[in-house]
Length: 153
Ligand code: AMP
Ligand code: ZN
Image (cartoon, rainbow, N blue to C red; front, side, top):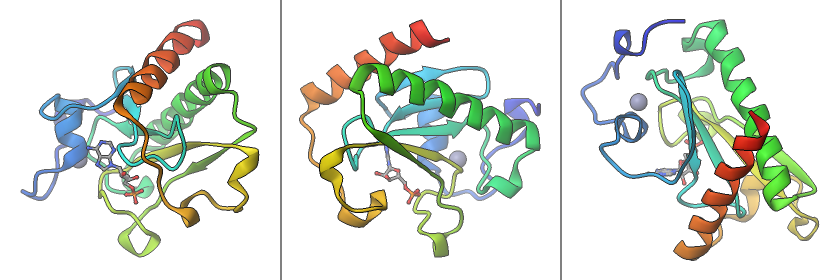
């Protein structure tokens, strides 16, 4: 796979997710490997809502090599298993918005892993908006997923 240093944000705009990757802004990180990181979404649809982000700046799926796309799905598999153990949702939405017309707000590729529960009612996760989760609970979720990931990988 392409080395992380070889690709950077093509525009001069500061990319929020590049800055999280570099550690310039904080995130509630649950997972990191050579190519990707995963952290809790700051505006979660449900508790445990996690974002998986490649360390390289690729805007959309079609901008990355196929090996990176495969890697993203491998990380999603690990995150899903860990959230299943920690939070035990009934299901998940695994979603990636590609392009602003498709609802992509941050133009750095990412996959949403959204735990789903019986009470959710609506079919698609993004329709009903986000939840306010207290910082203490977010930290508990973060630590829980990190612990379960140790057992998973
Ligand atoms: P989208 O680009 O529409 O797929 O969604 C971008 C997601 O990134 C939203 O769900 C935001 O809540 C989330 N987000 C934006 N900034 C941050 C941040 N600094 N830390 C964690 N999540 C973020
Ligand atoms: Zn970026």
